[in-house]
Length: 77
Image 1 (cartoon, one colour):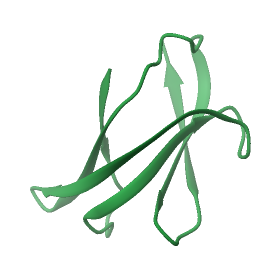
Image 2 (tube, rainbow, N blue to C red):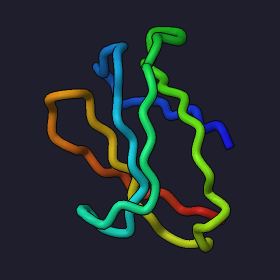
Image 3 (cartoon, one colour):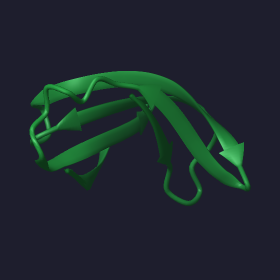
Image 4 (cartoon, rainbow, N blue to C red):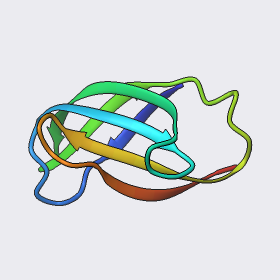
């Protein structure tokens, strides 16, 4: 599955790491992609296999190389 992740306001284009976790430090799925600007918003596209995840609440971690992780809640249905 290909995900388009719209990054927070002020995010710069470039390489990003993406992870899906139940809690920080417990990686379930990881991916890397390059963000590009779309209508002045940085968007990173990554291919991930979500089939092994059950519906429920997860966190999506996002970071640019050299920066700390930022986590955002997401619900898979």
